[in-house]
Image (tube, rainbow, N blue to C red; front, top):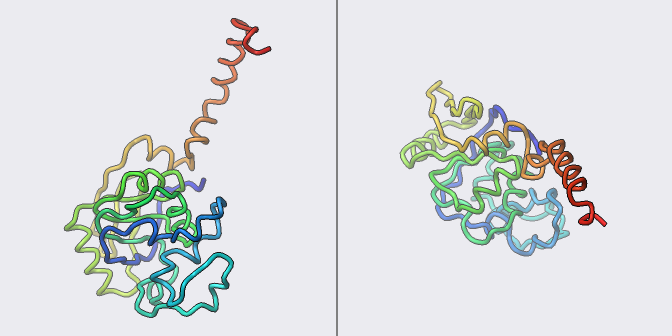
Length: 212
């Protein structure tokens, strides 16, 4: 898993509340369990004018000119700004896979669905929680200023705006450690490899019959 420390990037505003995981990555794309390749189908039903299916050549599909991610000013955006309850609906881990594969490493919203929130940390995405006023102010600023970019500093838990204004955010210490070190649950477990080996050796000595 990629480490997350400091991220600077353009902010793309998705001004909708209760965006569910089927909108993030529609159900027909869940056939694959690979973590890559989902970016072209992120927000597929909003992003394209036709119906998407796995295996289609997305480069020739008609784009929806009214969808925010199709606006040239948000090309290469790394931070997605959203409204409340982002990631609600089914628990599919394909949703953060699609966001990360597209290029988003950070989300900013007032709240997230619990399972989606947890899945973000497992996939190197930082879901920043800010209050409604801060998020509302960001939407207005992003709309006014093309190329609006912010700096997200995870070690210090600070979002720095273009005018140098700073906003602090909270994050659980355990999840912060995982992101800073690029560790998911498996990686965190492997940090204890030597302890696990010592325990196994001790158990074999104490109860060899358990090991055949």
